[in-house]
Image 1 (cartoon, rainbow, N blue to C red):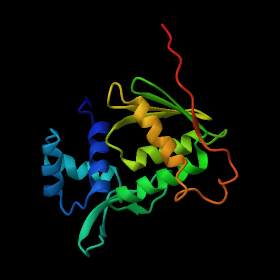
Image 2: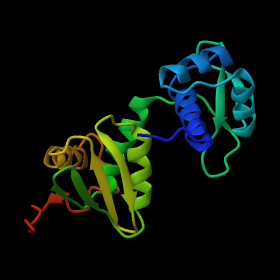
Image 3: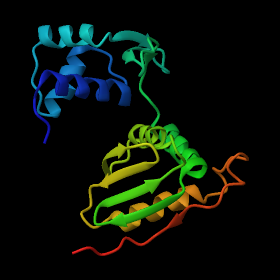
Length: 187
């Protein structure tokens, strides 16, 4: 459940324009309405200005909305390729994942010091439908799955990505393969 605050509306706009080509404010308003968010044209126009949204030429040559990238990057980010995000996640799992432990719908991933937030960002950008979200510290990443009992399968999937030789780089080939440790039952 997401509250219908201005911030939540802004995030939905960002999600829409970075996940598909949006050619007009009318189209964007219709997409938002499909998500249960009704906005006037004036509100939508203000939102786009506040988000620094601009129109850029899409891959098909049509003008589409784009928003600035993350971290102060002022380069507009057009619709992203989910497959590219998943490929990046696979590569980073191969390079950074040390171990995975699961319990219920939670997966705790271990990375080298300083790498957990970087890996969490890759999970977030991969836009995996079976993951609710991630929380990262310095060397530990918590992945929260949608399926109440799907942690074990998620952990195995991440380990499979880490151990896939097609995604491992030469820099990570010397590292030990990722392992799983069964979670201990705690009452």
